[in-house]
Length: 176
Image (cartoon, rainbow, N blue to C red; front, top):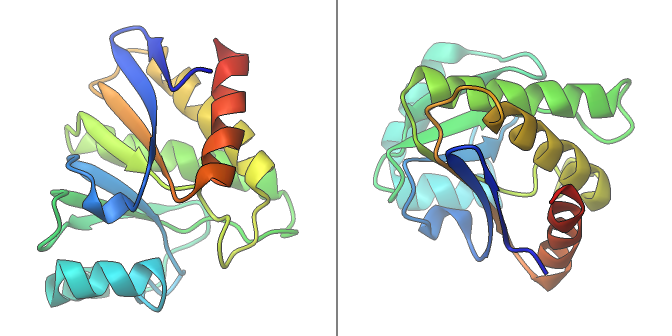
């Protein structure tokens, strides 16, 4: 089964683990509209990354769904965090909004000259986006973005467990 896909001068790759442990330039984070780093992944990011991240987020206030903002990575391995406010499951036009959210993450990466970026399974936790919808939309959006002229060279999908990994793997194989 495919674990990576070459697209022009770039590569899409799957990894299993915890995204904040990756040595990449930037990580994407599915943020709350108020940008408060709460429990779960946000809490882990705040703890390991330090208070600087939340301090930087204060300047943005509330962010609309589909928008993304960039902060430093604080004490994390990643230099940047791209905080993306995506839709909740069963929200009107969920799939369209997830696609636009993903594209906005990629645009913010491009604006910051980021070459390596990691995505989690966007919105599949607390926000309830079904894993199959996430995999289909996010992988397709990234592939189409990489088909254009871009500075991004590596996009990693960091998945927490075998269930997430195998579903993303199936979608990636179907794109080959």
